[in-house]
Every structure is written in structure tokens, then in C-alpha cells.
Length: 290
Image 1 (cartoon, rainbow, N blue to C red):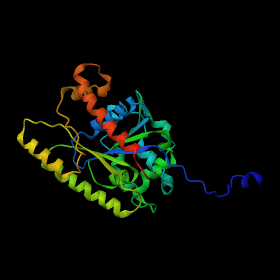
Image 2 (spheres, rainbow, N blue to C red; image 1 turned 180 degrees about the horizontal axis):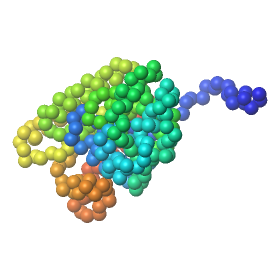
Image 3 (spheres, rainbow, N blue to C red; image 1 turned 90 degrees about the vertical axis):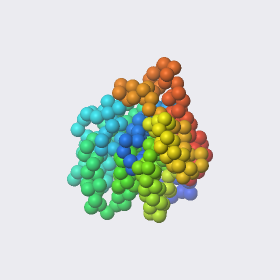
Image 4 (cartoon, one colour; image 1 turned 180 degrees about the vertical axis):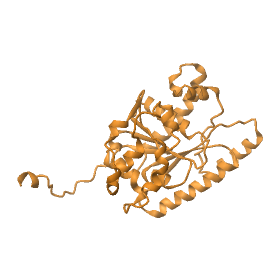
């Protein structure tokens, strides 16, 4: 009995230790805006600065897993880990743990995903626990915010339950977009969902850190006009320097490498832009208050 009672600790007034790690989501309802490319290279930019970084592929298309060479790493992946974290779904639990599926590329880790993630919403439809908090509880149960400085999440091009989970678990959001009317509408829908998350009152609403114009062609007058219009509607100073359709970015993606794997001068500007995104995140983090 002594050993049993020794596990019971008296309550103290000591403050609960808050994890230092931050979750940063790369998100846009519209597909084809370069979320995966932005998330991938920003993760390596943060790692270049000495931070310990984990990437999460939460898009069933698995493009981030593909860049890591982890699209076919085994029977289980992130979807199964999320289900494992839900006690009510014990009959669906598998034997895999985080360390069993973790993939490392260079100095960045990844939790890969697979097509089964597309059935996530249906799988958790009947649970009584808050479905919006599954990802946040997963981070807490696995102590990932004490293990990593930054967790970079590549989001699906939807605004469904997965994205709500991501917003409830994130502290910051980066929004890549194309300068066109479709992206403008997508941004408006995103901010509506962000308001919904705020109204839920389940957790603190994440901060929008940057809007990232991507695949921009300034030779097209309409793109210039749309970019100016979208930038004027966003919070002042949050729209960063545009990323253009550079051959170097296509080359690095085709070779499944980050832009930091290339030493040529023609990659310097891209490296500088991604370093700037990393600086936006770290500078924000230095002033982040709970």
C-alpha cells in the first residue's frame, strides 16, 4: 500500500510549466498556392538557425511526406497516432508510437501521413470528447512542445474539422496565397473560420503572422492589381515580399531538397526570403505572451 500512496502527491501552488514550443500552421483553403513548399523550406530555415523542428503532414495528399521521401514508410502514420490518442476509439488503436513513424531528413523531423487521414472526420464523428481539441491533446500527451522549438503543420486545402483542430492547436498561422480573386475569397473564408474558433472559447486564437504572395508574375497587370488589393485588406505590414516562379524553387522541389541544400548564388535570394519567414516566426515568438 505504501507504494500506492507514494504516487499521490499533495497539491502545491507551484505554477504549471508552460511548454516553450510553438505550433505554426501553413494554411489556405485554396489548393495550389504552395503551402507545402512554404512549410518545408521554412522548417529548414528555422533548423538552419539552430532550432529543433518537427513537421506534421496533415494533408491527406501527403505532398510534404513526399518531399521527405516518407510517402511509403510503413503501415501506420500520423492518422493512426491521432486515433491512438482518443480513449473512446480504443478498438481502433494500433501498436505504433510517435518514435515508430518519425522520419528525419537532415536536421528536421517529420510525422508523415497517408490517404487514411481523409477519413479522419468520419472516424471521430461519434466521440463525446471535444473533437476540435484532438490535435492539441495529441501534442500534450506526447509532450511534443517540450521536445521541439517549432512544430510546422502543412494543412489540407479545406476548412473542415482537421483545420479547426489545427487552429485550436496552433499559436501562429502563415498564409501563402496566389494574387487572384479566388485566393481573396479563400482568405475571407479563413478569417470567418478564425472567428468561429474564437467564439468556441476552447483555446486561444492563433496569431496571423504573415500573408505570403507565392508564384507571382508581375508581368501580368491583373496579378499586380490583385496583389495590391489583397495586401491592402490584410493587417498592415503582414504581407511579405512576393515569391516568384523561380526555376530554383522548382528544381529544389523536384529533387526533394530544401533551398538550403544548394550553394549556388542563384539560390541566395530564395534562401534570404525563407530566412525572413523564419525571422518573422522567431521575432514573434520572442514577444509572445500567454
